[in-house]
Length: 387
Image 1: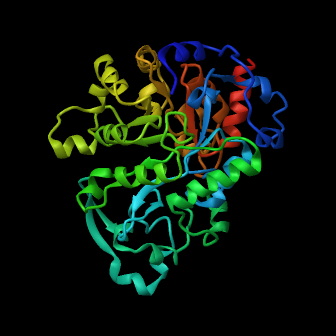
Image 2: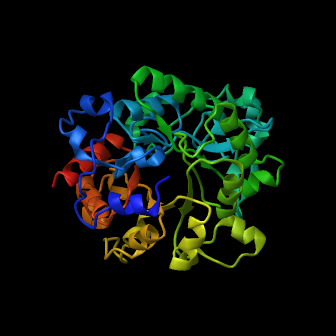
């Protein structure tokens, strides 16, 4: 991960200075990004410092075009030229395997409801304090989950994605690690992944320790080092601290709304909220065990009561001051997900002025961004760094 000095070299308050050629591989050429080789800055050195800046992270793959967390979504993200693929929101199965699903509840992301043999698995559980009804990965063996197929999670916003319902199964994290190696060989460039540990406290209470399982697989595939192309993230700071003791990978603490509390804090009685974590003191603490933060975009630029962007906060400067990189989440093309001042029309699946939104966020000096539409993100970066 980059040091504070390299972070200072890599950032700018407005348009970014060019720090070297960014190698995006064949994906950029396929998109017609003729200036890509000189468009984005790169940090000098190995590991995360070698990635283009601002980094385009494919959120659950190219999930704007394919059902999320499928090899179809991951593959398309690489074809589009994404710098990193968030290949894996990691949850556990009954028999201890790690699989890639948005949540342990899979009623909205698979066809499990169409399987009468699993009708009696439907349950109501408390998931981080929220009563949740559906089917949960920890009630299935891996073999049982492999009989299911992925479906589009938000069909009202992405009706075209439903064309691909049923095409792909649920990937395991081990399959993702093998796929990463295969794609790196095939493409002649290093493929990066950015898995997230989902609800570690929830799974630990069921005897399914996510941190240990992730570390074991990373060690098996020799991807547990500081310069390994695997960035690990979680919304639970104590989970990231545990990972810091187990592996040397770059680590990122995800941050939700300012008035929320990480669930591990709730469980342990820690009274702090995200607002406390993003103070200079809180950021210094995070920097003692992690290399970056993944804040919601609203922590970078808040919205007013009407949903319009207001003035940027000091979060970017504060985080950079202690050597942390920022990869906020998530920018999507569709109107309902955009700030109100960048929406165009009212259709739930219509695109707004997403390029304008990218400009606003990139101008804050963020180091990267999660997006469901990596091709759009790459074009927006091209526009931004070339002025």
